[in-house]
Image 1 (cartoon, rainbow, N blue to C red):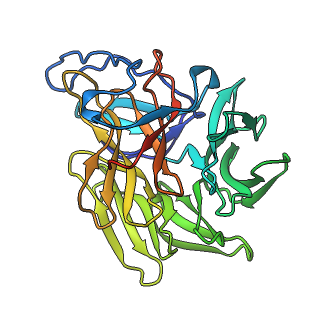
Image 2 (spheres, rainbow, N blue to C red; image 1 turned 90 degrees about the horizontal axis):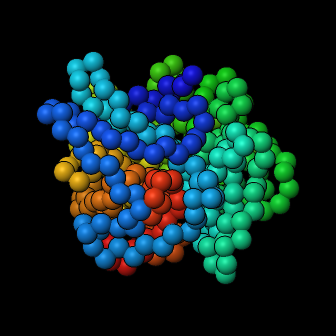
Amino acid sequence: MYIKILSIHLSKIIITMKKIVYIVAIMIIAQSCGVIVPLVDYARISVPEEGSLRLTKYTEGHDDVAGPIVQTMTTESGTKSLQWYAAPLLAISPDDEKIVYLASKNGFTNMYLRNITGGKSTIQRTFNRNIMDMDFSPNGDKIVFTERKGVDNIYTINAYEGVAVQQMVATTATELSPSYSADGKNIYFAKSEGSRYYIWSLNVESSLLTQYTEGFTPCLTPDNENLIMTRNSKDGSRGEIWMVNLKRGTETLILSDPKKGYSSPQISPDGKRIICVGVSEKDETKPQNLDLFLVNIDGTKLTQLTFHGGNDVSPVWTKDGKSIFFISQRGDVDGKFNVWKMGTENL
């Protein structure tokens, strides 16, 4: 059975998964008039609205890249609600030379490490596990991840060798979306408390646990002073992007929309911009789906970057700020998820 972790309406973010697998979107009935929205042409690499985006594909269908479960649900009122798993499914090494992604094979979802420079050799880093998300340590020697093992707990593994894992947090609560601080001293993560999620940190040296604020999918600004996260709107109807100053405790709403939701924020290396996932409404050419959006850290200049009918998710910046990697259904006739890169020179 599916386990509901987060539930937000339309564009509301839900973490609901049996295991992370890709799904192929199907024909969707338009909400009000019953018009059938055309099937997505997944084989297309880009669409005209994406202009001069420079896109590069890094995996193929046989790599079995795991994407989030994305579902269109119908509420009691008849409203269509898009739901998806919001935690990061992709990470980049600090030297910008390797990516780690998830692939579902033989009933398990494991981490795979791939070169993105000097060839595309791939190394499987975990075996017979059900990994849900991950992040590189700032010095690149470790990967922190969530594993479903009865309950969802947080572990680390050496990034390049060995199979031993170390459990970092061990509670009976669900723990998800771990992220290192820029100095590597703390791991931030989301922890369930009843039906709500709160951001916690684990001090790597002392094992001290600290609770901060409500939210999930945390990431830290490069100066380690601000926490960027997804949070439910007050009425629980959608996802919003918030920032909390860890010293002063001040909370700032960065991105919110009354009709659609956002999730999965990732801060740029210069600390000035945020890339995130958001909902695009259906039109005559595509169904309601997930796209990538860019916004300044002060909430100004919101820009939609992708417009393909397939889902674009899990964006992450390279450390030099010149590229954004993400997972997308584009460029595969069957709508399988693959790892893609876009250049940022025109953004």
